[in-house]
Image (cartoon, rainbow, N blue to C red):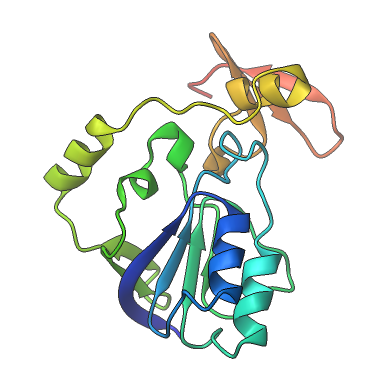
Length: 178
């Protein structure tokens, strides 16, 4: 499935998407949208192995696409598009989607879109309440409050610096303009 257009089926967690798939509530041609699983929303980035495995096991991996602000492992099959940034918890465009919106996927053209005007997307995002983290205390609460979007990598933001976890697992601060 390199090109696909279909109705959005919205789920605000990996677990809800999985239950809908195994419960037979996902149909051929649907585009499953799993949001609020990005760095801030998860917190962390949930791996979508359960939903993609369920789709494959039910023979739907060539008929149903899955997009998410979470992530995938190397074991995922089918049209699986992840790391959508900015994530839903940061009021990225994925948060504006509503059940049934038409999602358009063009993998060779490297395009992912929705049949909505920019005005409609902005209006929907403006109407959303502020995101409330699932976990508010401890290390995960701190992480959810400080982490940036997946397109920046594993960064924590603080008033005037981003803290980047480099390959050697040490933290270094850089100014946002760098």
